[in-house]
Amino acid sequence: MSVHSARGAAWNRVRLACLERDLEVCAYCGGHATTADHVIPISKGGPSELWNLVAACQPCNARKSDRPILRRFWRDETWFAR
Image 1: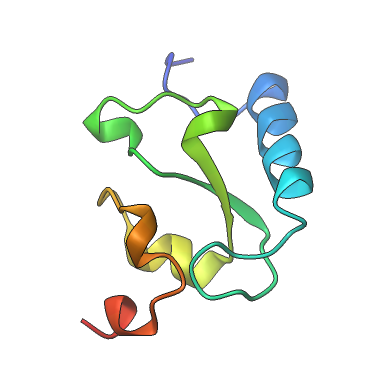
Image 2 (image 1 turned 60 degrees about the vertical axis):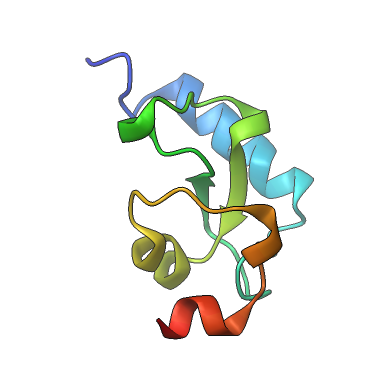
């Protein structure tokens, strides 16, 4: 398994800790979060550590893809309209 794999018990523990920390609220739209999103994507060198994760709903996580995002854009509806 790759070092950057999002599978396994270790990833699941970090993902659940992120969801708990963020109260299962999507950092981007404020909806119900079910996934953890890397603020600095793995493809750009971001680690799968709690400080680099935010809770996100599936649509927002998919929409963001592997783009990095700055905190000032969080919950900015116009960002996702682009």
